Length: 463
Image: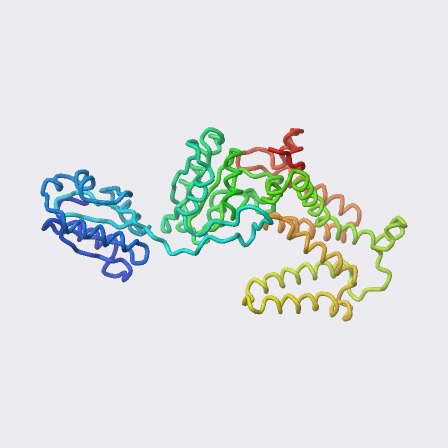
């Protein structure tokens, strides 16, 4: 398609890039040693100062010997580091739309690709979700290359491998597989790489979530997440050094870490930024709070169904006054109301978020009690459950816990003690039947049992 005739190449490139119809695709005709040349680039995705210096260098070229072939021209006439060449029309167009400048010179049959990209970006700042009391305060941004650099900065080892791929027939989204070559599960790596290459979706406009849904064909009925998201380069680097695979998707300010078990999802950076005793306390506290957040409201509902069987020292949990709305419906309605308040806070302008929180807190406490909408005990237990949900570093896991809690509430309401037992059995089945992307147990190192590894999941051991 491309040849040594510049007019042919301009015609082909105009047709492929539709430069005459897109205002942001800039076409710049220049002359290099009296040879007609054309430069295409996307406005806003190029380091203009570098290109100006490069064009100044082009105008000063006078040697004819440099134009014998593309290789010679690149070696002698392109004063830039990241330079490539191609005759493949699809590769050339994809490069242009990715922000790379393309240059065609009369007499040369290949297109020169000059990677002088400069993406619009925000400054690296503290993560909004994965916050820590100590340790690094930088976070991933939406810039693909910058995120890879943040990993390179922390792992200066020759075995660190960053493999670039693309997915999406139209979006051509950049994806990086990051792993330690001497530690990674090669079968898992090959499987993931093949799955990415086989993704047939047209675009990944929702980036990470769209990518995960295209990558993992899991049963929707199982709420437990199969991947771990992290906005922290230090957490991602630590998982890579363990032998895991990190996936960076362009335009996403977080990494995807695989394979992931239930115990991996429960860990957070603060566990390792504090001394072993403190880290162990934080780990155990998180497990206890998570278990309580699942069972506390179903058990409380059950005790109010059968108050005569409640031990004396737990009699204070019984609601003695008659309720206008059954306790079960109080719990369900407040579960929904809390989620509604959370969604409202996300969409509320920042200057009004404090006001919304105050109004929501009053509406869900004093007014609800006075109006007979909910009892004091219901508000108390749901307040604990709400706070407990935020103890989870993984938002996906916190929602999974919420769904399980609602499942237990419904089962307990319908079938009393047998419903609660059946719900617990179902949760165990969901956990046991779930597998990581490597095909291993979701409950490892509990199932199959590995005592030393399991101890490390609960106890912070000095490195």
